[in-house]
Amino acid sequence: MRSRTVGSTSSINPPRSEIESGLDLLVVGWQERVALPEFSLEGVACKLDSGAAISSLHVQSLRYVRRAGWDWVQFEIGTEFGLLDSLMLCESRLSGMKRIQSSSGHLTVRPVVETMLSLGGFHWAVELTLTCRKQMQFPLLVGRNAIEGRCLIDCGRTFLASR
Image (tube, rainbow, N blue to C red):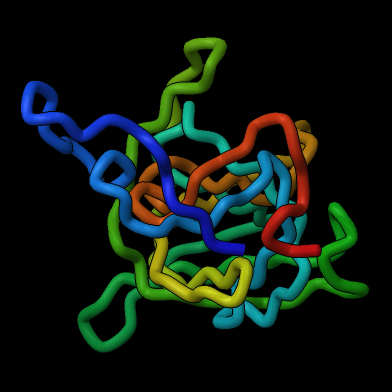
């Protein structure tokens, strides 16, 4: 479902963002199901959270490797949250490391990878931090950097784009 944003674009307040300029955005609920095709994941329950800058994926283990001059991260995903029936080993080139501060103030440094995300028939590249999210409700948190200029969150509804 696509939606056009309605709002004032008078000369006093010129458009400052893609939303205000009236570009079409995908309307999503605060909870959706997405695919991460490069990791063979379909129907992953996620929380879309404009309060979080970067997205985060639950992994059960990870290790760093160096191959042909590049840093890579290998990680297992699968059984927790019911993502898969058995553990699956994935790997991705390491994009970098990010310092992440939780809402409780705890600071961690997490590996960052870039991958494709599919939602509502649209596909785009996103950055994900890899971490253990077993204490969270969702295996995937999609933050504002991944949805900015693409999606508009209806915070009172769920599964608008992934019915």
